[in-house]
Amino acid sequence: MTGRLLACGLLMLAAGCAVRPPPAGELPWPERRELLQSVQDWSMRGRVAIAAADEGLSAGLAWQQSGDSGRIDLSGPFGAGGLQVRYDGERVVVDGAQGLAAGDAGTLLESRVPVQALRYWVLGIPAPGSEHRATLDTGGRLVALVQDGWEIRYDRYQPAGPLTLPTRLDLHSGELRVRLAVSSWQLGP
Image (cartoon, rainbow, N blue to C red; front, side):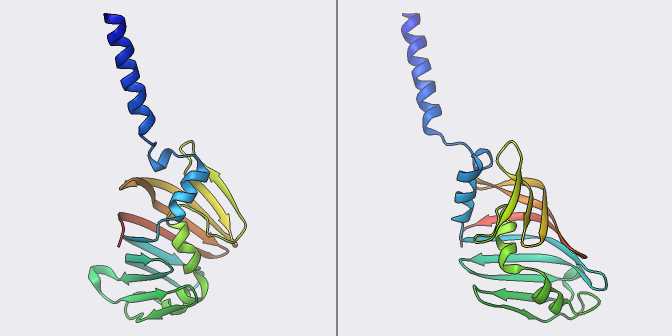
């Protein structure tokens, strides 16, 4: 009788394990990348710092992504100033750089930060259609990415629904450096 109970228990345990997929942070890289590329609608909040030799800005960040279109709202300390970046698959438009930083923050973002690729990099995947070199951790997550003349380091991840998404990124290309700290992720519209 105890042999039957043990066998039945083992079968139930094995059946329970077989139907439960691993969390996205533990998927092998090809499956993880495919899953993250399918995420079309998301939003996040956090802070960003962008610095070049003679220009820079530090701001609060609210980003909404829907398909190929997105909107990034940046705000200075205590909500002062403001900058809005809107983009679709073809162009980037920057509005209102009052009070955020020295120099022309709009020009800095519009001409030097690859917003179209950044939307993929913040999810922890390379932008499609371009050569890249990826370094992964044991959980199948990016630790480093080199693409389009940019080097991206991923320091931390956090659960966001069924996914595990980056919360600390450090990006640089030549003299330009972008640091991103994500406080929250929201998946879906």
